[in-house]
Length: 464
Image (cartoon, rainbow, N blue to C red; front, side):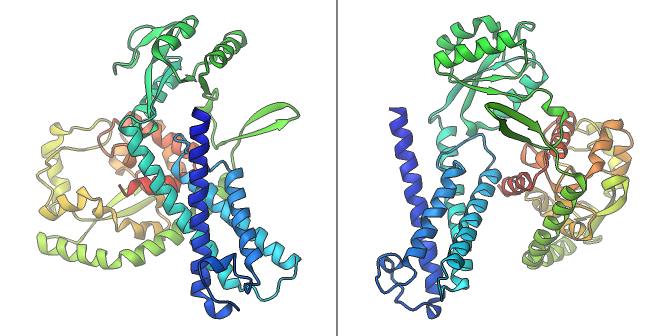
């Protein structure tokens, strides 16, 4: 029954992709109808005998669907980051279009307009991306409301197991209900969050049957006999097994999987740091330049409102540490009264944040317009100029004030290996409502695991 259901879903996904690709090609032909020697109709893209390129269009559709299938994009993998999935999609469309170019040249097909190829490729990428984002949001809505949820066990109640439970809890769209931990050395509630150690590893079969477990996450690495026994028991019970790589938190970069003969290899990879930084800088400059142009009317409007609302400068400048410990002035729209920094000493005892962060609710220093700007993070918009100057990145650890950083220990120094960002994991996981310790942990993880697709995913999640 499950296989039949998955086959139906897969068939529907392929059908929707086919419609998106077909309509994209049709629209591309419509836009450039003057360059094509046939009447542009919906059925004529493939069926019209007068269309000399109907086989080219058919090949384009089939190869695009094939590449998407190879990248396993005809299933909804909840654990996969949205940005990563879109990255696979864009590469699949790019490869299929490149293959089409090679076929056109190899077969010496004359007269096929390059503009149709370029416009069509763009429209295919756009339509497939929009439909997949919409699909994911719809599935997340269903899952959050209880559809097709899974019960899970975590093997190991150590730091990795607790961190995994926290991550799962913060992402209800995964539809994973962690029943508890199995651990041979710990008891009770290791994290104080209500999730308990409910048994030993030897109790795996009994607890799995009693709690109707669908997935198990192995976070602690025991001897090979225990590990192999767990795998065998899970296989017999039909339980999906997920294994957290040992020492993952100490290794930068991503993981590559390949085989040497029949032996699978997991490679702890790390791209050259200089190349990564150059690529990130280029990405930041191009995207921030476009965003600055688009946001210019909004920037002007906000500046006028700030000036009319209260006396003082439009912009607020704060000295921060950047990459390599270089100091720079970070820009924001002023959201507080002009002498806010001097007045901060009066409210030191009311600070509600831990670590070097200063935060109090209903801060009396915030202006009327400032409340609105902070609610929607519009006060951060001038930092686009910091990105253009090279002081900051679109995504990265948030730059903390110098006097606050100097109060902390050397763990802060790793945050200075990269450019600070306008947004980051801190913002999408709870803004200032999280502990400073967790903030540091997310910053370390981001630095060690940076990729273009991770940045795109964080940017996508920053908007809502």
